[in-house]
Amino acid sequence: MTATEPATGTDLLDAVADLGAALRQSLEASTSTTASAAQLREAAAGIRAATAPLAALPRPYDKLPAVDDMARAVRVFNPVVGVGSGVAVPLDLRPDPAGGGVVARAALGQRYEGPPTFLHGGISALLMDQVLGHAAIAANRWGMTVGLDVRYRRPVPLHVTVRLAGRVAAIDGRRTTVVGTIAADDAPDVALVEATAVFVSPSPEVAARYFAGVRTASGEQVSGRVGTG
Ligand SMILES: CCCCC/C=C\C/C=C\C/C=C\C/C=C\CCCC(=O)SCCNC(=O)CCNC(=O)[C@H](O)C(C)(C)COP(=O)(O)OP(=O)(O)OC[C@H]1O[C@@H](n2cnc3c(N)ncnc32)[C@H](O)[C@@H]1OP(=O)(O)O
Image (tube, rainbow, N blue to C red; front, side):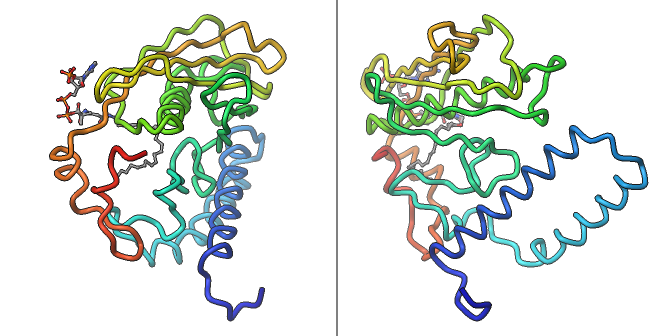
């Protein structure tokens, strides 16, 4: 592409993903470097200089990014799956070929460390909330998390490929119960983390109240889509 092409569609998404990857590399390097104080200060100045032109062009937080695709539940800055997010893994969730639900594989880096060399338990909970939420969406049962129970059986090692999976276990009115696990990819039957989440699809009145002001990039209201997955 040339510099004069409009930054829309795929090109904008590519650029968003490129910046997201750079941010994640930066976060990972910052938490795993032995650089000197002078080197760290130089890096901080460079990052601040790179940030200024972005901060000068803010997007209102009730206007969705142009790169989001709500119809397919693609949220590009989501802090777990978003390719544009510096804090996201990002997880690449796909339908689980082995019997319904969704699955992703990832090796988690030092930026997510809790106990030395292991994953922070709060990050495990965050990942499970998202994985289980997508399992609900995959079953056309979008809802908001009203409960999340996490059991930590064994610590999750960093830098080792793990398998994160979720599947719908029960449906009851607007309530969807979803279960899932985090396990080493080479021992998928030994759960390191087990999670159960309950998602509730908001009533149309509540959804309208919560999301009335939210607009897509082209100005459409999104509240009518709540609960449709
Ligand atoms: C912007 C538009 C959105 C468009 C959506 C489209 C696509 C989505 C796109 C991308 C999404 C991508 C990924 C998402 C995946 C996961 C991400 C994590 C999700 C979250 O990060 S989300 C934030 C944290 N989450 C909250 O912030 C919720 C706070 N909460 C509430 O806002 C209300 O709770 C609400 C609105 C949920 C329900 O309110 P409401 O008024 O509509 O419904 P009501 O209270 O009547 O409950 C109805 C039935 O659920 C039962 N029930 C209620 N609570 C229960 C509980 N704790 N345990 C068991 N059952 C429970 C009742 O007992 C009743 O059951 P019954 O009918 O049998 O009596």
